[in-house]
Amino acid sequence: MSKFDDLLQQLGTGKWNLLIVISVGYWIFQIPLHSMGAAFLTPDLTYSCRTPHEANVDIQADNETRSQCSYNVTIEGNTEEHVCSQWDFDNTTYTNTITSEFELVCEYSFLRPLVKSIYFLGAFFGSLVNGWLTDRFISIARWGTRS
Image (cartoon, rainbow, N blue to C red; front, side):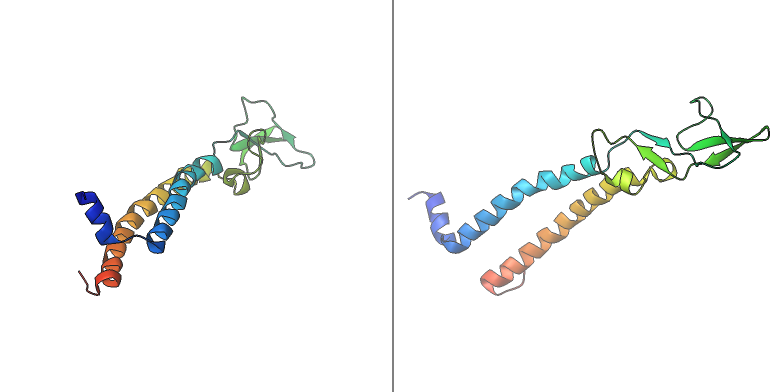
């Protein structure tokens, strides 16, 4: 017998090892889906300001005087800039996203990359803590002692 066969015989085989292989095999396909999820849930969508329909207000509609985050209102010759509070999103590629659902544009646009950063920070620290916990509790369950 080879050293590898001796190691397998010492570790043992059976239902327990089969359960571990199946659970790890299932989980390994989930990791890329979770990692890529934020890219598809928070895309950078094309949007435009939805201007209010007020009476006796002339809204400048050309692109030179209206940005996506504000619009100009002309009342009796005086032009005022107003901050946009509602947007129309381009839903041709994605019908519903976190970006459009929570209107993560203009002053809230920093939240889109923040979602991705928090996820990966959680994965980083979670892997450190979970690795330590696994080593600690596997050794207790297998040998009955703490390391």
